Structure formats: structure tokens, C-alpha cells
Image (cartoon, rainbow, N blue to C red; front, side, top):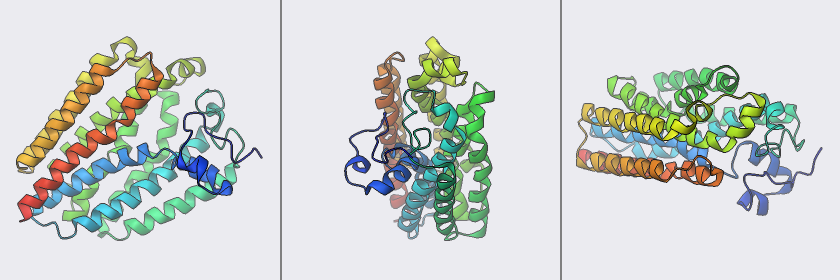
Length: 310
């Protein structure tokens, strides 16, 4: 077993490295608590849909509780998903400079320990899910199939980001399932918009590993788009803004929501203008910045919900 205090190459100087008990560090790294950006990105569509659905229902009395439950659920389920991803990718991660120091390829934990930890996180997520209505529970469980197959997609398709989008955008459906006990056209359009957003930001993320991925045969939209990445981002980010706008119109959103969407659009445009695909550190920073883009849209939707419920 390797030293459990050993740091992950692309995540250093964080609270896990400095404050967490040494025995817990490999598990916190498996669930990415040392770099929770993915949890925030998974959470944003959940919060968008919860706020939009509450605004449509003209009722926000349960919204604070739903926001908190979605927060807990997003963090533990993203942790479970990352643990599963690391289990399936443990041999591949050993061949990539950025990932070979992760807990499994570096030997900080065994596969059996990682599996047990994944189950524990999933059970916490189930407890959160059971706080909702039956339809929402079934909707949440349905997402597990997509989560299970995602790690294998990079081996067989140039478009694994679509499958990631299907998984990471699932929260766009959950807010409507929780609020109304159904999924309507507004929810589906919001879901489609979120998927387009995910394809865009994960393409930026994948450019960090494009060279190593090419050497070991891993496929991604970053490798597929290559020098045409900026044009692809204009397409997918543009689709995201357009589809989310259609969802807002369908949900009779008022001016704060549209202001939030405008801020979201400006942020995405700024990312495209700044991007240099040959600069991995810049790609990382731009990818991370998407939590702020998502938060800007959520702030507008939340203000809209409060105004409509007044």
C-alpha cells in the first residue's frame, strides 16, 4: 500500500492535503472532495430546475429544503460516480501523467475498499432521495444507468461528453419531479440546454489530457474537434443559451431569470474568447469557472421564483 499522504498531481495545496486525517485522505480524493468543482457542476442544473419549477408553481416554501437536499445529494452522488469512474479507469489512469497519482493507480486504496466506499456514498444519496415523492425517487434511480456506463464511453465513441451531459444534467429533470411529480416539456428543454453546456465545458476540460489520450487511444470531443474547438464551443454554448431561454419562456419566467441567463451567456462567451487549447492550465481554470456561470443563472432563477411567489 502506498503512502496515503501522497498528493494527487492535479490537486495540491487543498484542505484534504493539509487538514484531513491521513487515513481519510485517499477516500476524500476518490470522491473529489479535494476539488469539488464537479459536485458544483452537477448541482447547478438541480438548482436551476428547482428554482424554475418553484417559480412556475408560485410557491417557494419548500425551496430552501430542496436546495439543501440537492446540495447534499450532488456531493455524495458525484463522489460515488467518481469512485466508480476511478475503479473502471484504474489501469488507464496509470498511463496518464495527470491521473497516475490518484488513490487507486498509486495504490493508496484497494479496489475492494473503493467499492465499499462507493456503496456507502450511494446509500447516503438514497437517504436524501427518499425525502422526495415516489416519482422523484424513481427518476433519481433511473439516472444510475447512465452513470454506470459513462466510464466506458471514452473507449468506444468520440462523444463521451454526450453521455456525461446526460448524467450531469439529470438534475434539470429532478426539480420538476420533486415539485410537480412529473416531467414536462419545460423540464426536457432545460435538460437539453444543460446537456449542451456540459458538452462545452467538458470539451475544455478534456483538452488537458488530449496528448496522453491520443497515446493510449482514449476518445473525446477535445480530440475530435481539435483546432476547431472554438467553433464547436460557439455551437454548443449557443445551443445551451438558446434552449435554456426556450425553457424560461415556456415557464413564463420574469425579468430576473432573463438577466441571469444573459449573465450566463456573457460568461460562456468570455470562456470562448479566452480559451487557448494548447495551455492546459488555462483550460483547467476556464473549466472551473463554469461553477460561476451556473451560479449566475441560478441567482436569476431564484430571484424570479421569490418574486413570483410573493
